[in-house]
Image 1 (cartoon, rainbow, N blue to C red):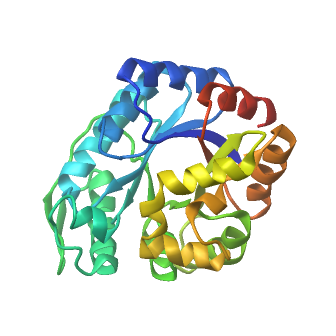
Image 2 (spheres, one colour; image 1 turned 180 degrees about the vertical axis):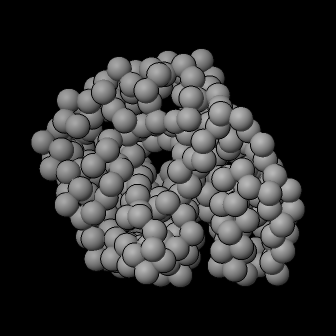
Length: 296
């Protein structure tokens, strides 16, 4: 299992993000991914951090598909590949009605079909092929010519059965969030692995985003996380994955405690079939980076 850091909504300058990426690389970690949460553009930020932290995989988890046309996103992703030295990974997903309709004013219409068509068009464009795709939801006609940029790894955020099958058939893997080892081992991994095998594709990446805290008061940390991300606990897709684990809110998914507790619980993800673990620090990020470097 590969180890990395997830950078979410923390208010940092571009230079501070670059400094953190360098620290992640210096600690011996494999990757640093960025969330698209309404501040810096995650793809642009990942690309410049990749250029400034040699050897580090950089990526986004995830870029919303509804507001971005596949032609525009393919150009942006391949540009990020060129800037980062071909170490960029593109994570995409349809997001949630509360975001797409509430913030962008775009109808969250037939997300499963939208996502399948989006990936079909995007995959061709990322390969640099002339593309003439005309689906019911997506039309993409053109080509992205990016000399020297290799096709990036393409991940789809997926938690439910339909999206996991789509990820296995059309993407290089999936990204999960609020999903513990048991639900990855019993639900996520079997579905996506079977779909990839039936489609004749290589074994997929299972990239798990896990929020963790080094703390002597795990209960307080879980309460604080639940309060900060109360909206996430109300989103249907997250409610479904929480229900599969017998959890009532996202705070219950926090990996919290001392170093021995965190090491034990984080390593359990590898046993469940996780290929890449992205830890989002809830608390002192520098301390978490040092800790992760010591156990990877």
